[in-house]
Image 1 (cartoon, rainbow, N blue to C red):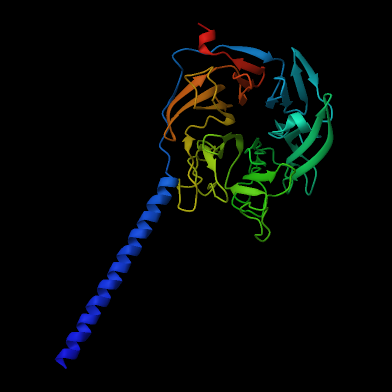
Image 2: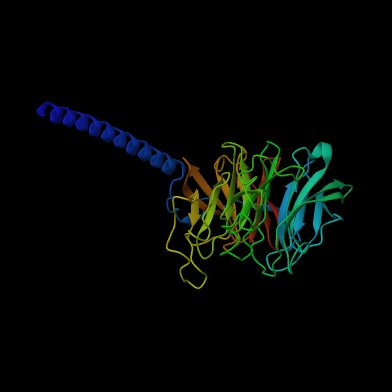
Length: 398
């Protein structure tokens, strides 16, 4: 009997040791996974205060006499296409501004109107131009953001194709988005804001609004979009939980799409867009209601993708560019974001994915709506009440 008891004790001891070892190994794996997730989705540090630079940049007006220039892009010959929120598109070449015919009919309400414009990556061979705008087409009163493309021929838009229309319409005047970028792999990304329906649209992938969308260049949905085949999902959605993205770039260095987006009172964000990820609005935010009341106490959560950085107070970001030009060596590799609220161009110096310095450029010029690095390497900015201006390098203002 003693031998049997001794044997049973040894078996139990070895079994317990084995189970403990497995538990320890499992805990170690879970801890490593959690650490890995935190490393790939870090909580952002608070930004430094924005300051004026040691030397001011000068500028020259390239296209004047514009009320709200919303978006612009460069033709292969260096001339510029620019949208006016009120519904007009202009072609500026050799000092002359010519109206483009065939612009879409817009729902001109609140923040809605004629929005972004972008040339097809192979425009020289196909003449396609993409445009986002607020449209009354579809179900319900009011409007929602739409994406179209058309051929640009002899200052006319022809062969129009409607590629996407947000549903349903709303008479609310806020948060239409919208920017357009290409990823170099045959895809187009564009944005629609939450349309002021924050408690319904952003967290629901069966509804439009509060999303970044991804399409093939002909408007079809890529088969590898994250929600393809999911019941009732809007399959064009690439990421969700956004508020109102009005700046977007394709970061060629990282191969990622980055957006900046309006928060409420505080909580503007820069987000690295990843397939199928939820960016949290309005369940988590660094902002509060405009009357100072709390939206949520939560700033982050395991199911949400954290922003790269955020602003408190809000600067109302619109337009986005990463500087690659040698004409501005002090800015090269860093980010530029237009501020509607404070009417300046913000320079964010970046190091290891973190903002190390913020500078206020071109202060007092107007509400900065868009910023682009031109094919000539100069930085161009769309300023409300002014038009399109070129920022002069410091060496040219000495």
